[in-house]
Image 1 (cartoon, rainbow, N blue to C red):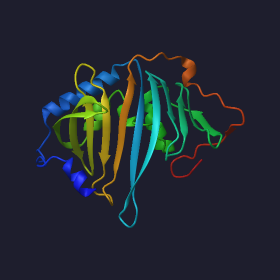
Image 2: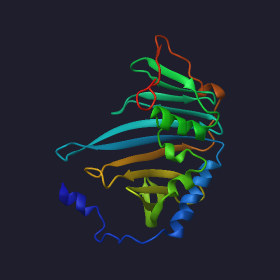
Image 3: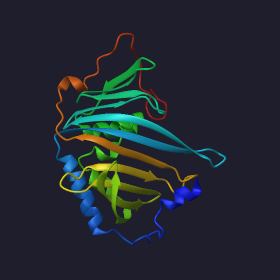
Image 4: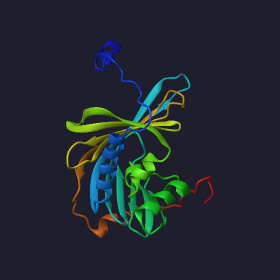
Length: 242
């Protein structure tokens, strides 16, 4: 197995360039500006999170989600069957609802009036993060590049058969990579966050497919309607306080 794995790697690993390559930031900005300029989009996101046992052995846990966004204030994300909890995430510009269909319970509360402050509120107050949430902000470029110290273009690559520019960056205790579709439609296709100072150097990976940059959406898509037998519960605020 090791021989097969190493045979797939480049024979000579490239050196770590110093500083931030303007070409890398130009490609990243073009992609994030393209996303920010879309009135609506939908995407399938397959995520993998790694955990390290006390023995040092790594485990991976997968989940698949479909995200639909309409700016400035609509978002729905459905995480299907997988290793992570099956959930749906509804935001209609007024309320945020998290629904667990397997357990048949949901929690709803008032939320900020636009997507960006809602994502901040969900993360900071409720410890709830939307799938690929970093890329949903209008100012995603500024957020990604904040405190970044190195960045470079690794080269051309393919993700799911789509030709991409592969970029690599480092900030603080986090390394991150992003694969951006080459050409006139610079969609992010893969996003990897690595924590080199954590035990086992775990990765969080999101692969994005089935992009639709002009989906047919209605307001009703983003409004949660309780299913028969669903029970309402309260969110637990960060720190465990209700």
